[in-house]
Length: 120
Image 1 (tube, rainbow, N blue to C red):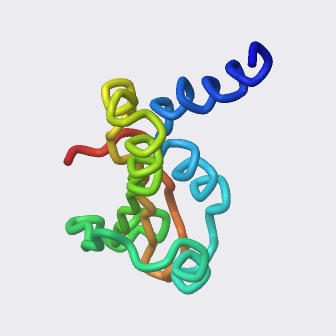
Image 2 (cartoon, rainbow, N blue to C red):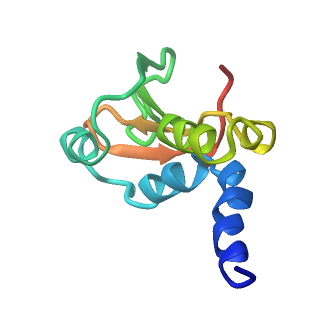
């Protein structure tokens, strides 16, 4: 019993530590400049928000459209509730994480913002 108890307690203690940040970072690392909109869409899917960036003029290096991607960890929330009977919710990072992708006039990636917490 002494050896089994730590093995059972470890998942319970770690259950509250789930975050959406690792998922957002892994997707962020797959996007590079000069990818097309189709390539980004095939990797990340449909963006949460898509909007034009007005007033950029005719400069080809400036982004004219921005796509926002966000991830939250609803599956981990369910796992946390099941494993810890609600105690893990106190310690769990429930913030959505994401980043923005800016596209130029030619439809290619110009900028990718850093991964960070997004407001709810």
